[in-house]
Length: 157
Figure 1 (cartoon, rainbow, N blue to C red):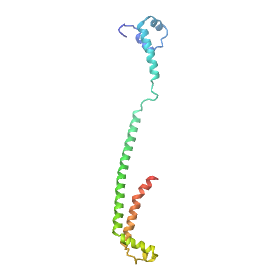
Figure 2: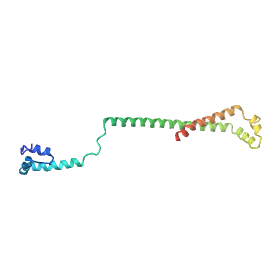
Figure 3: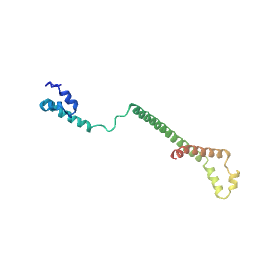
Figure 4: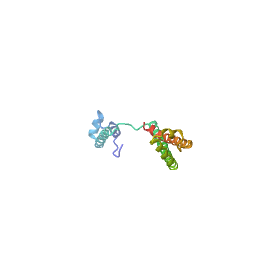
């Protein structure tokens, strides 16, 4: 009911502009109800046009999405940590190789010189200056390089 006090105003508003029967006769004679019917009809059209195509997601769906995002965030943090460790391991292996090659560079060049000159047997049998500790260090460095490289290779596949 508004200030004019028409008793049919609420019924006109609820009708949404589709007025029939005795109410239609009243609306033809009442200025306030005519204005109310016009506004109610317009509001009904507006509501039909502005209906959302999809409803809001359910609380369960929001919770599920938040859990998935938390898990993805934790995975990204773990991958970042693994990358940092991987870079450190690569640096350590590179440092070991550089120390090894600097320390045993002359023995390595002599060993390769023996192999190139055709003295394969002497290079392998031990008349060369290569010691067991040298071969063990070389094997360990090769293993460290393979172990440091395998995660990168397997991650790409």
